[in-house]
Picture 1 (cartoon, rainbow, N blue to C red):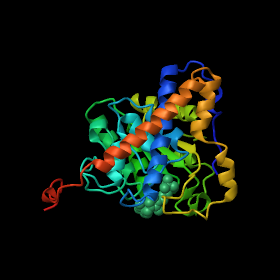
Picture 2: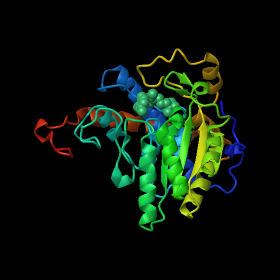
Picture 3: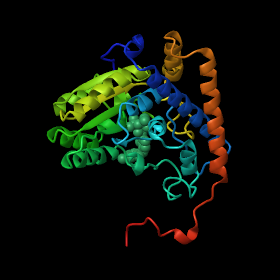
Picture 4: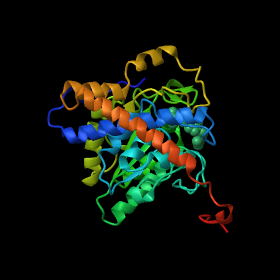
Length: 333
Ligand SMILES: Cc1ncc(C[n+]2csc(CCOP(=O)(O)OP(=O)(O)O)c2C)c(N)n1
């Protein structure tokens, strides 16, 4: 497991905007509520295929996305519902996507998780991973070419860092000094393969040395540590100083997807990380720091639950695509 470089960001709330902290907390709570509801929907047969969730990734996905401007670009992966919600994706749209509904961002052309919203600067997830990395360099290249000060934030998993497209993207981004931030979500496993079989690096952020760019590893369950590291990397990219890697260390607390019982995961890892729920950790920091009180916590959690329930109702009631327009959105002859 990677060691972290920095002290936990949650050690102090000094100098932080309470309104922003509350918003980050709300989106983390909403992410968890929507994913819990979707797990129930998967079990109840509401969804077409499998379900990929980001339990214990909320601090990375929401924390990193919250460092962007609304006009920046983002190339998320299957653990990043939190990043989608931060940027304005609606929970019902995500559910509709897993149901292949006409109202989903893909219009029902996809029945799982390959959704995005270009109007929100969110690039659709390609199935091959991390194929979103070369695309992210393309988006950053376009921004630089056009003289815009936009940043592109891309996410990938630990296993993905051993793939060729990771290396190609990092090489291009570094030699061209592109405004990219590459976030590695190290959740210890790539499907059933443990980290020790996919990388020999002490820390995945050490890979930055090969590209001559900054790399830092933080506790991926500490949203403020993530925000501090990604915030710095975004500022650097926007100033024209090129890309960076930020690794957040966490744990995949569910199977690779909901069909996977994940019996191969070490019991000790579950035990260790069950005490490190990023949503609870942040909630406690905010309660202790006086940013939240018990009543507000209850309301935020209740509201999130109700929103997830309403989202399910809407997605269930929405229509399937019309067979008559099956050729729309097809770009091949
Ligand atoms: C090129 C490619 N190979 C295999 C897969 C099947 N697959 C999807 S996710 C995944 C595991 C990825 O592990 P990691 O990058 O660590 O991300 P995690 O799922 O753990 O968040 C695999 C093998 C794929 N989508 N693309």
